[in-house]
Structures are given as structure tokens and as C-alpha cells.
Length: 495
Image 1: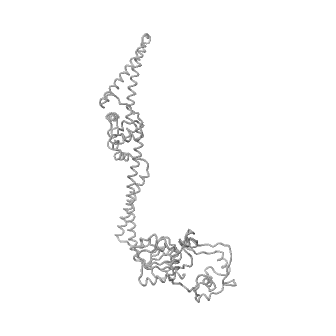
Image 2: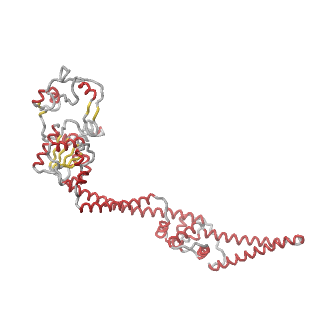
Image 3: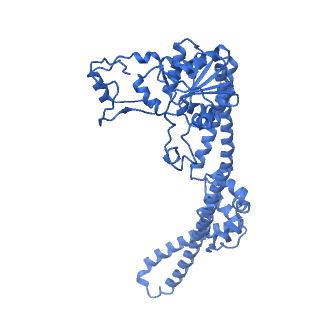
């Protein structure tokens, strides 16, 4: 165990012995957090720990994750009922929101939407459309099977009007009358030319009989049309509308049944677009309302779950998480009300992460680390302490520990080292740690095998490995192979 971890363990031991709990323990990496929590367990300080987050690689620590503790805990009936009820409300709000969203994404306008738009935004057009002239009602009644009720009637009337079936019927009636007039004129022309054609008497007799038959049918049709017009209160067929007015005039004119087929097509497109916009505006309001309702339901559900988690965390001594996790779980950590924040590897932690972990109840911050070694890692070099501008203005990779050290805040420093042989420690003394002392145990290390001196610099071009998001430690396989070549076994640590 390194001196920093040992110090952190001893500090937590003292705090817990004085009933200071819970302690919020944060570390920059999952690896460092797991190492410290595992040390707490191995040294028997306490087993009442909770690790927040799910990226632990330590199998023994997984049983102390918050998720695992929730599964083991016997939540009371009130908690279970509240969570179940909040989840039901959340799913129902989610389904309602999803339905409206699907409707907003669709492009087709339904009959109901168009009818609603006409009733609200074009009432004159709607009233005229639903109350057609008498002749149109007569035409409708003459079409077998047309009669409908309710919404189907509105749909049928609209389709009847849109396709101009009334205009088609009147046009066909006009065509029939014109055809009869033409045949009558033709018959009179034939009568003027039949004199002197005695040899064709038989043929003429057949033509006359057929003409008389046609005239009889046409007389019946004419009689029926006359009756039809009288019932409609008309003396003659109305003229076929052939105007082609612009849209603004059509929208100002309520007489939709007097419009030509081109005008009806133009007005239909305007109605469809207006209905689509009306539908969108109406559902957008519904979407906004349901979105707020969903967010409230989600917040209520999360609060119910947090209450259950707080009941578990209220029973633990140490709450451990990474600096990133602490920033994400601020609300949950605030509910546990820790009074002490202990930061491992504080020299590598961004100041923003420290500030994000300072929930309102924190009274004491303990930072363990080395501000003279590795700084926090950032992606933009121009914002770092190594950049001439970044050092003056931004200082994003300056840790809280380094800033407070430069400001003159007193810090306790470990001045006795128990690892390096004196020859190596002298390099650190001449650069960063002038007060560094050697413990007596480091003076008794045996000489390195196969070398004339215990310390020297070896030049080679073999790349090192290691260093990832979990650890900054590096290794070099070539150097290890060289050491093993001198007769050392694999687990040996050479100082």
C-alpha cells in the first residue's frame, strides 16, 4: 500500500472511531476507488460501505454496490407501493406523449381534423357545405345508397362537393337536352327530303318507327327532368360554373356550391393546409403539456427511488464514488448529508470535480495527493498550465490542491520515504523534495545483480505500455526482460 492510501485509511479509521459518518470518499479513477475501499475491508475498519456506480472491477466490492444493496434490502411496503405507483404514472405519461409525437410526425389530415378546422376557422364555408342548395339535395337523394349520418354524412358531402358530382350531373342533363334538340332538327331535315323516294318506303317506315320510339323515351326523360326541376323550385337547369378566381376571393366567398371544379380544387388544397396547421398547433400544445406531465412523473419516480436509496445509505459509514459519479449524483449525496469529503489522488482531480462534490452539508474537506506530480488531464493544451496563455488566464489543469498550495495554505507533507534506495531518493531531493528523508530500512537494500552501480540511465527505443482511463501507471516489457535476465524472479521488486 502506498503512503497516500495508508494515510487515507488511517484518517477514516480515526473519523469513524469518533462517530463521524457517513464519509464521502471520492477518487479520480475507478481503480483508485476500488483499491481504497478494498483496503478498508481488508483492514477490518468497517463493512458498512456503499459503492456508487457500476464500473467496479473488484468482484468482492460488487456486493457493496448500491444496486446490490437495494436488492438485498427489505424495503417496506410503503416504499414498494410508492415506487410502483410512480412507475405506473411514468409509463402512462410516456405512452400519451409517444402517441401525440407519432401524430405530429404524420402528414395525412383526417376527416375529423378537416371538419374541426372548418367549424372553427371557416364557419361560413362549413355551414354552406353542410346545407347545400335544394337542387343538390335532390341530386343527392336521386343517387341510391348515398344517405349517411353524422361524420359519414360530412365526409360524403365533402367528397360529393370536391369531386364536383353535382356539376357533372347538371352537365350531363344539359348534354341530354342538347342531343334531343339536335335530333329533332335532324328529323325535320329528313322530312324535307323524303318526297320522290317511293322505292324506299319500307326503310323510311322503320326509321320513323325508331325515331318515334326515341322521341317517346326523350319525352319521358324530359317529363322527369321537368318534375325534378319543379321539386327543386327551378324552371330550368342552372348554368355550369366556369369561373377561375384566385384563392383570396374564394376564401371570402361562402357560396362554395356555386364554385367551379377548378375553384373547388384550389379551395380544397387551402383547407387541407389550414387543417394540417391547425392540427399541428393543437397537438403541439398537447405535446408541451404532456411533456411537462412526463417530466413531472419521471421526477416523482426518481424521487421515490432516491428515498429508498437514502434509507440504505443512512445505514453505511463510507460512501465511495468517482469524481464524475459525485457530480451526477449530487441530489442523492445531498440527501445523505455527509459532513466530511475525502479526496484520494487529489493532485490529479480537476478543481471543477472537487467543487461539484461539495454538497451543502460538507464541513471538512480532506485532500490526499501530491500537487508536485501529475496534474489533471485535459484535452485542450491552450487551456493548460503548460501553455503561456493558459497559465495566466485559464489554468484548467491546476488542481485545487496545487492552487491552495501556491496560495500559501499549510499542508502536511510526508517527509520520510520508505521505498527508494538513497541513491534514487537523492534525485528527488535535488529537484522537488529538499526535505525528503530516508528511513533506515532503505539503507540495507542489497546491490543490484549484474551491475557495477545501483543506479544508472539506460537508453533504448522500446516503447512503454500501460496508462489508460483507469490508471496513469506505465510499464516497459523490454526493461522487465532485461531485469529477468539478471536472475530475478517475476514477483521481485528492485529498488
